[in-house]
Length: 167
Image 1 (cartoon, rainbow, N blue to C red):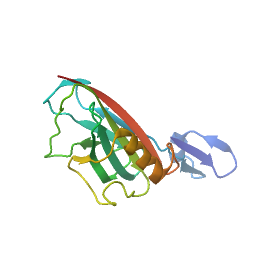
Image 2 (cartoon, rainbow, N blue to C red; image 1 turned 180 degrees about the vertical axis):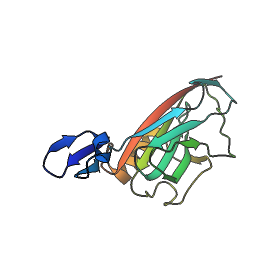
Image 3 (cartoon, rainbow, N blue to C red; image 1 turned 45 degrees about the horizontal axis):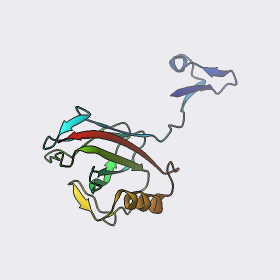
Image 4 (cartoon, one colour; image 1 turned 90 degrees about the vertical axis):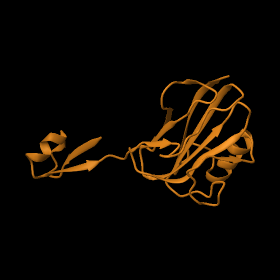
């Protein structure tokens, strides 16, 4: 959202007035830090089918994506991936494929966007290939809260999405 402020003390004006009045300056209002993630394609897929997600953040930063399967298995899909505000990140990244695995149930994907590069599970290294982690869903949440505090937090935000996996 753009707000035009009259420097000559006339008050507020519409942004289109900026081109006509040299006494006006456009001030970019603070953009809230918001993250979003959603499945690409259907919300229900069969075991063996490819599974993809798109994530986006309203601010530049670093992205971290984790999947929690119906079995409780936790997989890191991405860590320390550079985010550009408003530019969707499709996961898995180009050239990689992730497939729905048994058992059937719900796959939960967690996207964390942070203004600061986090240590994550790989000590701050970038990850673009799915990697199974030696933690449960509770361990994942505890690790995230331990590193960045309860969310939402000033420097990080979190979003989630679900896909139903059918046997």
